[in-house]
Image (cartoon, rainbow, N blue to C red):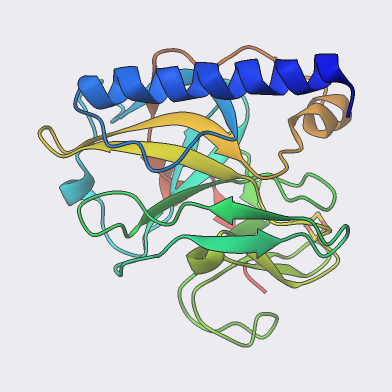
Length: 230
Ligand code: FES
């Protein structure tokens, strides 16, 4: 590694540590060092009021847009403590640390809802990728995120690790902050390998503008007309 590259990485890490220190002083519990920081967005309901983690229904799929105003993400309370773990990319063998769940029980997770294979994502008409609580013919097990287009299956309890290909790597994890005092949640970054660049190239109608300071959370069934399961 060249000296200039090394110094740049050191500077970036120092900046991120500083960011965490500021957030910690503000009372936010930061889960881990951010892999890729994006502007912070508070999760709110469609009427603009803060989303409290206690109001999330377990195993219900919620949707919000982050870190861009057109990139959808799933939000799930999986109802049990989810510990940090290493997540591997089947394609490259690279691993990275997924920080586990957020919230009072560390049961809340968020992932990019853009499939890492061919960038399929929920839209107002259909959702070909979704969370399934019950076992499905494709997944053959409960509590998975499945993409019906080519049959990829992801494990939301393990950093959206790939259970079935052709997805080449896990869904990117959205870094969440949870404030114990207010019970509010915010998205602050992305961990893993996001496919935002490929998404904007494949679906050029979507604007590449960052999400605003707050992002609406809705149930997937209220966002899309048809959720396709397989
Ligand atoms: S687009 Fe999801 S499996 Fe191909």
